Amino acid sequence: MSFRVVRSSKFRHVYGQSLKREQCYDNIRVSKSSWDSTFCAVNPKFLAIIVESAGGGAFIVLPHNKVGRIAADHPLVGGHKGPVLDIAWCPHNDNVIASGSEDCVVKVWQIPDGGLSRTLTEPVVDLVFHQRRVGLVLWHPSALNVLLTAGSDNQVVIWNVGTGEILVHIDSHPDIVYSACFNWDGSKLVTTCKDKKIRIYDPRSGELESEAMCHEGSKATRAIFLRHGLIFTTGFNRSSERQYSLRAPDALNEPIVMVELDTSNGVMFPLYDADTNLIYLCGKGDSVIRYFEVTPEPPFVHYINTFQTPDPQRGIGLMPKRGCDVTTCEIAKFYRLNNNGLCQVISMTVPRKSDLFQEDLYPDTLAEDAAITAEEWIAGKDADPLTFSLKGGYVSSGNTTLSVSKKANILNKASASRGGGGGPLSGGNHSSANNNDSSDANQSAAIFSEKDHRNILDEIRKLKAIIVKQENRIRALEAKVNAAAGDETDARNSNKNGSGAAAAAESSSSQQAASESANDHSTAKDNAHEDD
Image 1 (cartoon, one colour):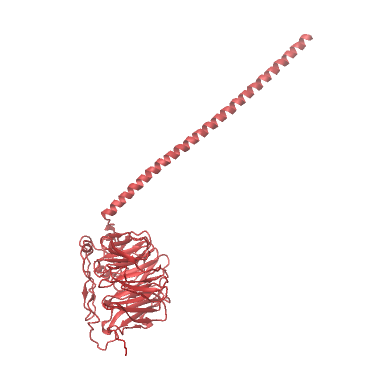
Image 2 (image 1 turned 90 degrees about the vertical axis):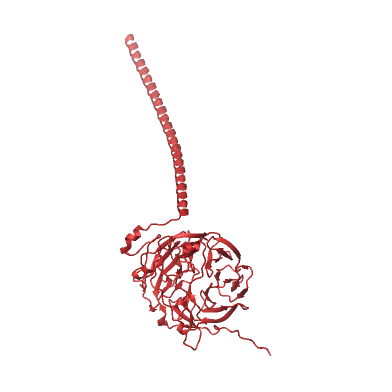
């Protein structure tokens, strides 16, 4: 007699439930861009969604209590000159969000507590480096104000947002970067590229540590670091079947697991919950959310269940664990964007009979505070993200001033409570929408590193050399033109002189002939008189 042993797991019975329509967000004009992005970012304070906007790019920011039908003239964040492609909330400041756009600029915004009362067009800081559209923005998990950006110019840049400086520049990708992810403490960086390869970098030095073929298909691939160091990837095989894999960083060429899912053509976004080790696969255009549990036992990635909806999804966002309701055993909350303008809220719950706090479901989760500063991180210090217990519920740390040891910090939480279209912040290359602080904005100057200064001077010298070369060329051309004009003038003068001499000769000959005829006539008359 044979029987099958059911695997023991506390997440076997996780189920998803959609909230009622009046508890969701309706009438949102979700972006129609073909860029492979989730178009949505969530934190415990706000929901941000990339929307269609005339005359540039914009995204909408909504407090969680503003449910129901959203007014068509609701204030937007709209300072980009091209469509917005990706947005990401800062993990260490719930009022700060970064956005990348087709206008090649990365902007960092500060959202006031309570949301926007008017359209916000002035960012806290502009990060200008990329030469083509920026399709990926990613915050460092433990270092304060460290932001990674990647564009279609194949460049990956890591910034210190607090000063507007470039910390690291990685230019070894031969094609467009599809995805990037830091490991748990931010000491490693994994990327996937259009050349079908997966790469692991040292994010401080930009040194390539290892690379391997990711998925054989030509469509977009994604890769994320799991908490304990493994790498999870999604992509396509040669037959355009969607698949996922699990790999070890020291053996990228040999996947631990490689599984085919289906033949759909939508890119799959892996959303990872580090506390429960659950991975949610959400495909663009799919009407389902599959979730898996990663364990040390074979087959390592265990399928749990599928949440199904009747409508295909345009984008999706995952709420951090700080925003989940521990009283109902909610372990995940999704904000799912539909094509009809509805942002559907989906709650993933573990059924438990007890109303007490379930410590096995809620280990210590990521805190809002940063573990280290940007200067400490770039100097070589690593630190795991700070964690705290959700027992008793999550309480925001309030308006705490973030500080950078060497330079003034532009991400100041205290300014979030000033209201209006985003508070002004000091330092860096920034602008402000508040007239009261215009003097601070005027006193602020763009801060360049010594390398940038040298590059600018080199460019100026090159331009001067080009100008001198062109001036010499213009002078030579003018001399040639003048010489040609002089020859033409001389020829004209000689022609005039020759024609004048001929006319004079002709007139003198005619005069001589006339005088000879007159003489002959007079001689004839004299002869006639003599005969008479």
